[in-house]
Length: 347
Image 1 (cartoon, rainbow, N blue to C red):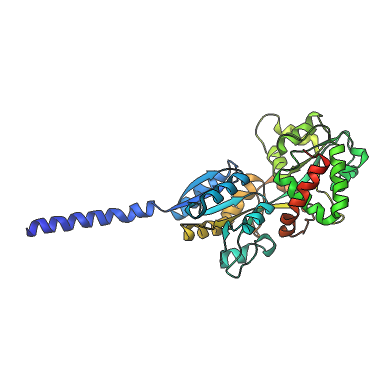
Image 2: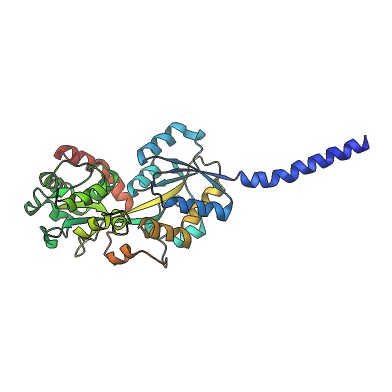
């Protein structure tokens, strides 16, 4: 009996000894992400190597993530949500999909204008990278002075020249929401109607398609996010660098309110089951290593001051004046903007 007792103790000790590393391996973070960039794989792998926390990722667009979080409710497994548009972050905050986070690390590193509303228990979300909404144009047929303001894209000189993706895409809705703040409702409607009049073809495709359309001569002027052009500038795919070389680039409105800049950011999901891991992940995204991945991997500007860049495309863009319209204002303006788009027939 005594021997059997000791054998049982030994067996229990063995199980207990094995359970500790097993539990360590079972650390997990459930991530809902609207980021679809291959270079982010290294970002996530590095987090797992540093912390031992494995990432389970669900990829979708902003709308898909919203719908999933709402349908899952309190049963949602999501711990962290990553979105790629400032107004979408604002909307999720206002629909109660995030929980506040008080983190000295994040509040020290992330500028106040790139955080969500502070509830008293901390901001609801944090921005980790930025991208500019720029204009590309055919250097052979378009004068830079004709496209150096967003407003000029609606002028008669640009009739038949313009290409864009859908007006209802988040990147355009955010730009138009900012323009509503600058111009007011009547002038914004006139401006958007002018954009529709100046279209070379119906809106379609993504931002890279707009750049390629300018390079091919399908149109002469287009709107795009900066990182799409930077990606072509750094590409090793045959012909893609040539596409970038054929187009000129403008950071609009440098003489007045500045170029529209959007933000990609993250938050702890409202019903996160692994809150400690979630906060640790957000803090990691503000680290020098992660900020370097955003800049050097996906051609986005880091938000943490002093981050070192190793990106010839971002270096080529140089510095520029950025717009300062509050993200909350851009978010609130989007319903009005969509109504205007419907009235002017912007597809």
